Image (cartoon, rainbow, N blue to C red; front, side):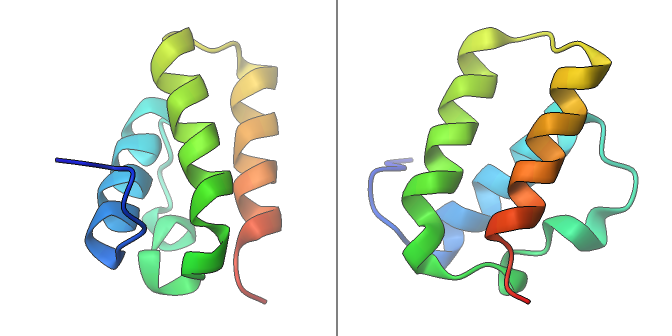
Length: 74
């Protein structure tokens, strides 16, 4: 899968992966329909950071969830 292309399918894949990595229980906040493709680069950046870092501390996890919340549609 080429995640360089900003598609809905890629966005959904990354959000699902982020939800798994961050241990998100309420998956509603990770619904791809709630994110604009114009924020794709921001989400991809977060995805790449989390994949590279691996294990996150609780405060890092909360910071990433807060950042995802900030790029979500209102």
